[in-house]
Length: 212
Length: 212
DNA sequence: GCGAAAACTGTACCGGCGGTGCAGGAGGCT
DNA sequence: AGCCTCCTGCACCGCCGGTACAGTTTTCGC
Image (cartoon, rainbow over all chains, first blue to last red; front, side, top):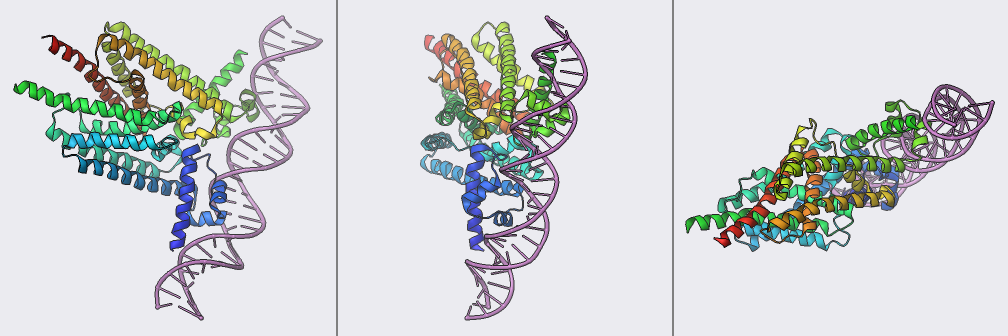
């Protein structure tokens, strides 16, 4: 029981690195089993086909992904009283953490599954969709809290604003890889941070100006 | 000579749709030849392997991509005297054009190649990098022109700002696919538009306020 | 320590796919 | 007529995903 989970986890670990490095199609099962020191039969004992591997991979990735966001923005929320300051600090911490990765962000499995789209079943597409919606509600909650305190300079839909965070993350990963500049992703996050600061600090300045 | 080019173009057209729909690995050569009504030998007469197909596909895609940006931002530049207004109009036109696509943006081949990364040779990675750099210099030129007229509310590196446009485009494509909401990409472009307007119109307002 | 279940191994096989090699043919240009 | 471009047809290779299934070791609860 426990042994099986450990092997399964080892396969997933090796598979994730390989898939993020060269895509799902280019990652062969034979390669995974030689690297984990298991036999082909052993592999198919754990995952009855490649699609199931993809699902497990994605679920594992998303759990970890959510854990990281919880940690970073949770820490930021503890350090700052103000919701805007907390969010800006969170973006900064995230940017720094990504900048510390020596080879840059390894890649996002959600993006991989999007690109391979129709190669997978509807179940995986649905997990992907739910993940994107979860990101949306996570960041929307933060923006909603900010908007209770700060009036935005321009009225922007909180959902669209929340999606902007995911958009910059996903786009930053792609652009970092295309440019071969690991620093691009953290830099783009800081640009987004400036935009958000401008959006809300502009608002409070306007209110101060109107009051005077 | 002309006949060959036509067949080649037909293969590329079919291949692009297939690759964007389900990824490169999941697109089989056999499938391409049945759809174009050519034989396997005929295919390998035009492309000596799959890697060469990828290169041709990418080059064709980038030519078309550049043509579209030239058109849209060229038109915008003609319609507006002010460089900021021209850029904002260009983003709006681009957003509208993307919103008009019934099934959303079909996908970006640069992102596909990034995701498959090590499955291709260095030549393709280099084309990808040059494409990203070309986007950067295209939009940097626009921001440079804007900055001659408007002072940004915050000092932001024109390169980073330029990359933000590509980042939002690439990220928006991924998020649109993940969410299964074709409207997400054009919406995100409009959010970026708001950010850019805020960045520069905030600047001019400050100068006007300082003068009064 | 024992028995059952879980976690594998080994082997043999299948079909699809990327890719090679080569011979030959149709059609147009000179 | 002869050559070149553009293909077709065919035979073949090796890798890979996947199946089937019998047998073996490891682990864990009792």
